[in-house]
Length: 531
Image (cartoon, rainbow, N blue to C red; front, side, top):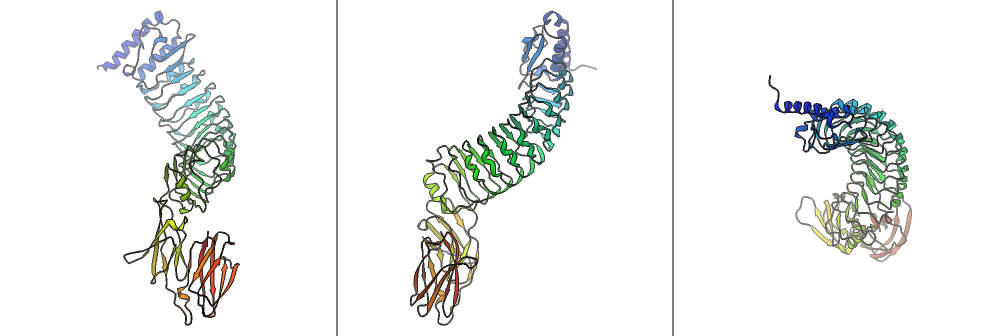
């Protein structure tokens, strides 16, 4: 049976090394040298990108990637050097190793348990390989370990609880594997941790409140897993936290009210979860924040309390249920670094957008928005699209017919017949947004004898200070009452011998109201909006 040429060459080189080792490398521990030979042979050393001096008569300290001190191999750095095959158990003989860096290669198979024998190891970097199987429990024997990077492999199983024995560990990076289960509570006792990255795995369950014990954590990446339940309040007790990514999970409930305690936050990513409620007012304390994304949740309310976030560079609140009734406070003079605003697929109207787009001249995505509601006022239809009325153009459509009715500067429409109607509204400043309404069934009112109430109309709607009412029956006394939905009367006025009346509503608070017109022949009610 013939030996493979590559294998034969490797054997010959190994034999040559063993014969000459005593003469050329007396200062290097024998078991270290033999372990290196085994590693070379098991990982395709002949095909490494660089294998300078390996398995030659040259001192081991001159072999590419090898550092020797005090007769022991202290560093083995073969980063991105085309290592293939498996890592042999003989790696455990290099007990003087302080740094092992084999990242960005094509190593496969399991991580040998013998790696736990490297009692002097401070840095273990096996990233970007194809290691499979579980994380060896023996790694917890490496009490001097400061950095453990196993990311971008195919490791499976759970995170060993025993890793908590690594009291000096500052960096734990296990991202981009196939790890399952929850984060063991023991991990949260690792007080030296500065960087914890577990993203892109299949971790699940609720995030334990014990996470608040990681008092030195600066970077916490848990995105792209299957975590669920609430974000624990204790997360807000991490004073040094700078980068937090919980995106692409299933977190639910409201954002903790004390989120503003994280005053060192620089990047905050909460998008693609099931969070609800309002953004906490304490967000205004996050004055170091550069990037914020809460997109694709179920958040509501308006954008207030952000005037202190002057360092923002990007802001994404898209695909939520935010609304706004006042000017949105993101103008370029207050936010000099803000280059991206994404706020589409919410419930914003032209209120606020006009002021924002007048002062902000960088990327702003604000279309589309949720449909607006059509109000049926008896003899007229109207919508509240916000913004300045004179900047708005209302195009009304009747379902089943061609053509449309275009009205500029007035949100009130008087249909000529019964049917189903809807409206599209454009604004001369927020030109990329067309607000579309729902469809409403409208029935033409029929006037009673002696009354012309079917022609009652009022303008404008929404109104700020005055509501001009037309079409009153001048032959009788008309009583005008303004109430809320509960029937509380805010205004009551009697109008005699006049078909029109200018009703002063400046004393009303902003909101929805009911205008009731009573005469001796009819009682009519109409909805209107006070801005």
